[in-house]
Amino acid sequence: MKIEFKGISQNESFARVAVASFVSLLDPTIEEITDVKTAVSEAVTNSIIHGYENKGGLVKVEGYITGSEIMVIISDEGVGIADIEKAREPLYTSRPDLERSGMGFTVMESFMDELIVESELGTGTKVTMKKIIKH
Amino acid sequence: MFISFKVNQDKLIVFLEGELDHHSAEQVRSKIDNKIQDNNEKNIILDFSKVSFMDSSGIGVVIGRYKMITAKGGKLCVVNPASNVNKIFELSGLFKIINRYKSISEAINNL
Image (cartoon, rainbow over all chains, first blue to last red; front, side, top):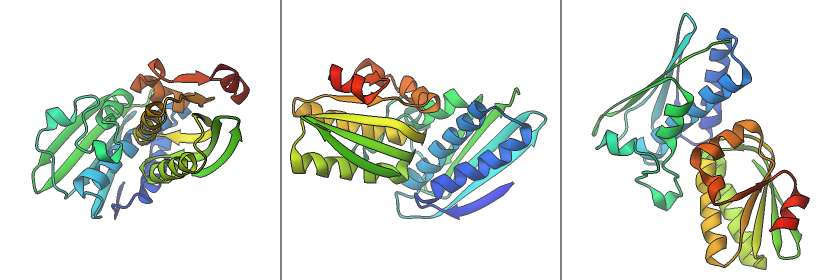
């Protein structure tokens, strides 16, 4: 599945519900759905706040199911990440002024089985996450 | 997210209902900060009983209120988060510095 929406905070909930509906095809537990929803919420929020610096832009969410594994890709054409390793450091945030906790990537890593972050300055960022639904 | 308040002596009780994400965090932040500014309650009790979803944006807003109230010599605590919300709190390590109680009365007695 593929959806594209305006990078505004109102759409964070929409993205969560869309992916939750999609992952429901694998008959997950409530906890598994919540884990995926939360990870998606983090990635989409990052695109909105950091990728597009709260100025809007299109956020793309793709979902793929292979066997019992769900893969979700969240991408934007925003400013990109200069230092991906630094960004992934727990509690590091480039926006402490916005009361960001710096935990986004930590949540994605903990709640999903695999996380790949690709980015290019001035071009955009692509976050790929996978989870095996065991139920 | 729906936010309402109750005051118990020097404690501001904040009832949160709905989803706490980046979109609703700003609202939570300004409503609580404005309330404290108006009445200057010393402590904050955050009732999470009706919070159905929270991501790390919620952690950010809780930390922000914690910093604000402790700078004024007060305390902040969290009441009755559901298991999914609790999971994010545990991941953040926030319960090492903020107390969690099962009910508002327990929070009032211990604050």
